[in-house]
Image (cartoon, rainbow, N blue to C red):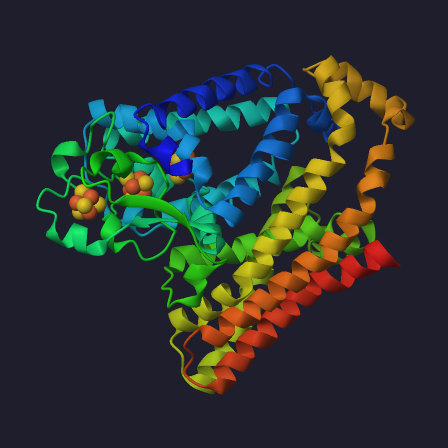
Amino acid sequence: MINKVFKNKYFPASFQSFTLIAFVLLIYGSIGVTTRDPDFAIILRNTNLANLIVWSYWWPLIIVTAILFGRFWCSVCPMELITSFFGKIGLRKKPGKLLQSGWIITLFYAIILIIGIHTFAIHRIPRYMAIYMLILFAIAVIAGLIWEKRTFCTYICPIGHLLGLYSLLSFKQLRVIDPNVCENCKTKECISKANHYNFIGRSCTSELYPAKIKDNRSCILCGQCFKSCTKNNIVIKSRKLAADLFRDIKLSWAEIAFFMMVSGFVVYEVLSEWQVSKQVVVAIPNWINHSLNITGSLSGTMKAVVLFVFLPLIFYLTFAIIKRAAAKESWLKAFTQIVIAILPVTAGMHLLKSLLKTTSRIPYWKFALAEPDGVDNAQMLINHPQLLNKEILAGIAPVISIAAILLPLGAFILSLLIIRKQQYANRLSKTISVIAVLIYACIFLMPLTAWRFF
Ligand code: SF4
Ligand code: SF4
Ligand code: SF4
């Protein structure tokens, strides 16, 4: 079924056109709605229909899809359509070394996380969300006009590393059916320069040769090679969970830095669901803010820098130093080993966060649909919080509790299986990876158990 869709000449453009219209409607539904009151924004984020869809459903769905099935969001993402279109008429310059290093993606993500979300609350204030989406569109257009192919997707998109790393876990992969057919293929339409700017049946503009794809990170499942390959030699097929992680994976420093931030962010996101663990997580940034007399939105900036940059850096650096002392691993190898070990737990906890978010917002749908801009309903819910019907949440609470334990446990076991298969300089280095992932998993498991069962 998927393969049939991918071979269709109207794919992905028809889906992308649909999501493009959806994006425009979401911007329209949020650009005129704003507030300066942070407490009001906490409710408004759920009563404004566009904001509710983007942050509580669309974004979690992207995460869940990437972890379970791979980069299928990219298959329908309107940014790809936009940047490829402008790439066709633009200057087609080659991206420089800085872009190719992947650091722009990491930096862009850090700016959105630390400045966008934790300083300006783009996830709570609808107008800021709309501005953020417009900025993304503008950068996709500018990148398309300047650089060749789809440089925005390959080297700029702020979620590129996230989707790439999570897709290493997925149950699906795009590969060639028979490598021998590719070896004997004289025309190689899938990488031919002449096809780079075709509207239908483009050769790969993500710098990939389908016959040599080693893992899921870089293929954005655009489906163009399905149509450019005249030998019908490309397929999306099922595989076992996290198949890529059982092989030797080389990560760049940009990906490692990116993942360190994400692993800190997921700790904060999951533990802030329970007030008790939230107090513990924010204790250090609160103390720093208090000591330095930092207030207002800047306190959010400091909190994000501490939780997503400093603390993860200390955690990873500690284990990397021990690995180097114990097994003389190189810095890159030591950090890579810890990232690969921890990846399943971070992804598992991101799944849990998505589940918690999407379910907890169910009671708001009634209000968001009745009044899409959400301002009056936000005020009403502040005055009369009892109007929010939480009965349905009580009904699904046992399922959430079981997921809150099974997900970290299952992810931890997967991490152990991956560590067992990975190459290490010696046994001690392997043990250090186990200890790192054990500590990381316990950071979730202990508070989640206390929250849901005691
Ligand atoms: S890489 Fe980013 S911009 Fe490109 S298709 Fe994927 S999500 Fe969209
Ligand atoms: S994927 Fe298709 S076009 Fe590309 S080398 Fe293989 S057979 Fe040839
Ligand atoms: S290999 Fe390239 S052209 Fe084929 S689906 Fe992946 S990104 Fe698209």
